[in-house]
Image (cartoon, rainbow, N blue to C red; front, side, top):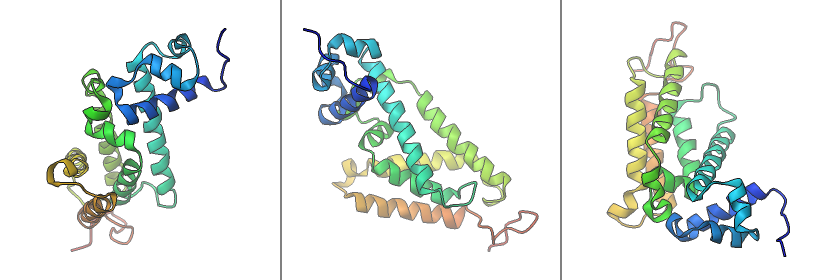
Length: 210
């Protein structure tokens, strides 16, 4: 007897796959386990996704969109372009609240398993290019200190974030509040050392703070 169809089958499969990856890890997840948990046939899963790598790619893409939406919500009240320190703080807050994106950011093999090797560096380059472009936009608007190198800033912030998120494995268990506090220190350093507020730059966009 054929199984009944379910509404929004694709979204349901993405929900189930995300839960299974977080609970068991990607390597232990199978298309059959996704089908069983979703209450559909295995063929129904394959009608939506060619394989488990494609399924996880779709889950990660959805999570990336969700992360971006969360950052937009957290910074909606701020002037455009969003100051770098505020953008960094909002991005880290959204990242800490999303276990899958934290795992993806860190290439956590316990969660992503062999998928880490299957994904090329393009997703990192895309993130790097996006941050670089935002710093370039801020520089054009006179909202960062003169002489700031957008690529150097992007690399430094990405490296610090990866280092702090992986600190628990190196220095012992850390609570989310401890991580938020440490990342808040970084945001403060960015605010004081890179950002230029509206009252700090004159009509010619020159930095006036000491």
